[in-house]
Image 1 (cartoon, rainbow, N blue to C red):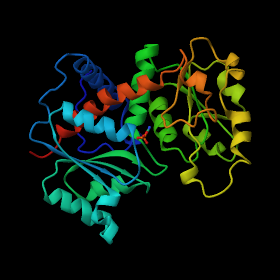
Image 2 (cartoon, helix red, strand yellow):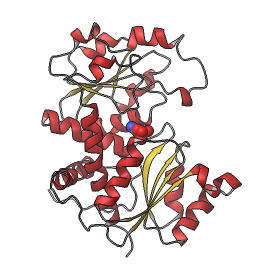
Image 3 (cartoon, rainbow, N blue to C red):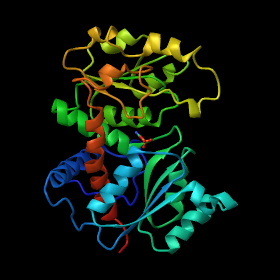
Image 4 (cartoon, rainbow, N blue to C red):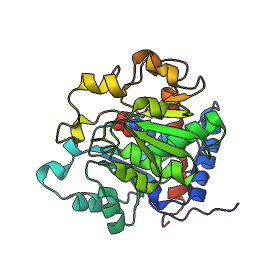
Length: 310
Ligand code: CP
């Protein structure tokens, strides 16, 4: 199967064909091999400048993008909102146009507003990679989730994947749902009815409001954090009550298949959505997800950089 990558931006998994998603995963396999060598650096982005512009906090995404850029030999600039002239009232578009004027080839951006990266990508010729936009999308997180599932289970098509928690406010959930459905997985979403509206059935996911229903038969269970920073109203009575009904713990884990994988995008609210012992236990692949994020982000940077004007 011959697939050519033709996009200067990576904005959303919704935009990608299944073949493009598989191309990223296959390219990441090659970069994972590079990361296991003694000499971990390749010259693929030599001479290219990448600006990491994080207008929202991040640990995993920011560090792994920066490491991926170093491994690809790019020149790197790191910016945060608090150290930029956004603080003085400069618009986001003016800020990125100035970054472009300094000949940045690629901008990796996280922003609290859904669609911010789409808007920027339409208005500049530098490539734009979405590192998370509001509650809309987090494509590289979903790609590393897909990569990890494929690596551990050998396939994605036909697997039963349950995503539990604050689906309404989760960009990870949206990107995971698009990616999993495009690659043929059966997706179940579970959580309180206030956080998992039935509307998600329209895009092909099964919705349930009972944790046991999401656990029985699942090959993969992905627990999400309650996003207090995006919630404007009380979507459930208390954190304790949420943990009681929707937290995965040692007692209810008996409903899981013995080989079910436990995933979490991080950061974890330990003992709320996921019991600490399970987060660190043999079924958990949480730190493998983080490790795979490096290879996946190298693949995305490599493919997108190949489509930039010289
Ligand atoms: N999973 C994830 O996006 O984590 P960070 O917010 O730490 O980047």
